[in-house]
Length: 306
Length: 266
View (spheres, rainbow over the protein chains, first blue to last red):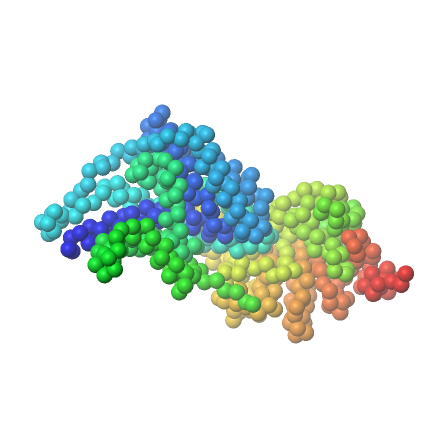
């Protein structure tokens, strides 16, 4: 029994890293503007489409560089056409604007790149690796693609953490998130900071989009992966980069373990069908967290004088 | 804190002049053809009944609002269109009517945020947090501690400002503006909602900033006692138009001003 559980745990943790990658994009934008960016999923899809279609014409590394360019242009367009007009508006107004951006991007991605299912070939073998064959019967099966994802994620997180924990930059970001007008009044260049953060978030979307695209194929359903990032954010806290990672790992491992451990119990005790736990487990966990610790594991506590 | 460097305007000369400025939102005329000036190192009060356009005037001066008509000359440079970033860069700092602090951050970090434009070190060093950047951070921290001492808020420097009582929040906000070492400090109702003791403290800080560092101050305030005590000259707005511009004593006797505040029999 230990072998399969360990295998599920490792598989779950690696999937969790993928969730974390998507959640990271949300956290970056939330940290710097206090905006929950509903368009993050659409950005992942758009990024994946860009890489997939560009890699048909260019070698993969060049396609990635070009896609980074596309995401920077996109960030500039969003900043210039949307955010700049909404400085000092309520959070809900900005949130609604990202809803608009989300649907525009989903459609525009198809207009620009087409609506078939495209492939991204990362050149990583799809054959599973077996570990510890001498310890457990059959060994432990690991997907090399997920290992690659974990490595990419680790690198991205390290770079971003260093980038944003730097005293001045970090402080400016938090300042902008807290109060646009006050941030402008002390000379923090709001527009520039938004551009940097949305571009960074776009680059994170490329990483997430490539890995998900390589697993699932680049298609519309990738934008729904973002929904899995929501419970991750609630667990980890909307403002915390480490929180996104830890939240992702907990959700990834939790839902897979729940499937194999909880499922059989439900079948035995209540005579239920027992499947599909993976689909709702994360959200139930998030709901429980909202009840006991609404700011998440690492989020900033909200302090309000009334 | 230091006296602002690089300022080319000598004490007593015009630092900021507002000429024929008009601002409207749709059909609402917030400011109508208002002109006045602010001289270097003076305390200039802007008063008027509620809705007179005082805050709109400050927002025009620091670039939050773009006036439809008129010119604004600051330190000899005339501009019709300026963004808040340029205003901050040029040496204009401000506080807000409803305290606008970075609520999640400590008092210290809030005031440090006021040093944003004073930090110049290469981004690369900042990331590594070594060498010149670390020395620079220390130097700014030192300045900020001086401001904290000056405002007598040592005890609350690590407290998230959202938890502080209103009077102290106002003081931290003043600290953040002072950290910018501004040439022109705009204060929007710095005493609003304060008790007598807090008002006296705040008045003392304003006088000290003005006298010790020669900082020019433009002040919106409803407490007439404070206005008369602190300011060198007073401009009075009513319904967006200027109705008086004189010394405090003359303003007190001005019939237009009395009518605006007390209403006039028709």
